[in-house]
Length: 146
View 1 (cartoon, rainbow, N blue to C red):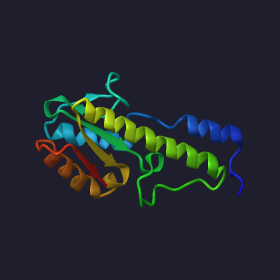
View 2 (tube, rainbow, N blue to C red):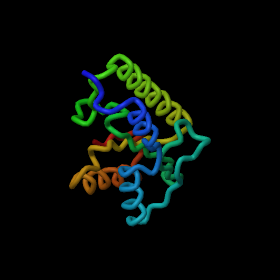
View 3 (cartoon, one colour):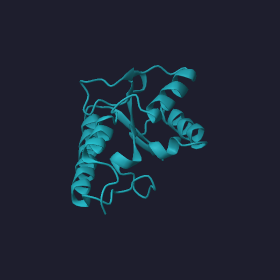
């Protein structure tokens, strides 16, 4: 299967993919702020620069896109039909890096929450964020939402 756009257009499209201030991240930030939670953003001194850091709760929140971070069983975690070997290796290295950074954060004493993009789609955002907010005051070291 060939790509439906030229290499120059594909390159431009891929270069515009953001690493922060994404729509799922902004959804979580708006709702947490409205609920009275305060947080820091993208702290460079922490492994992987977590999306949200809630120091009061010793918690970090990673908001993962299902496509790039390979949410298991999710319909959004598709693989492109062209250059599949390249993409499989890219996705595998993303997943390995995510796991390594999560372990590093936990070893530093942080509790880690992962909120998957699909959990924030449509009407699921309220339930996903309620789950996250209920988790914050607990002692549970990790939670995955989505």
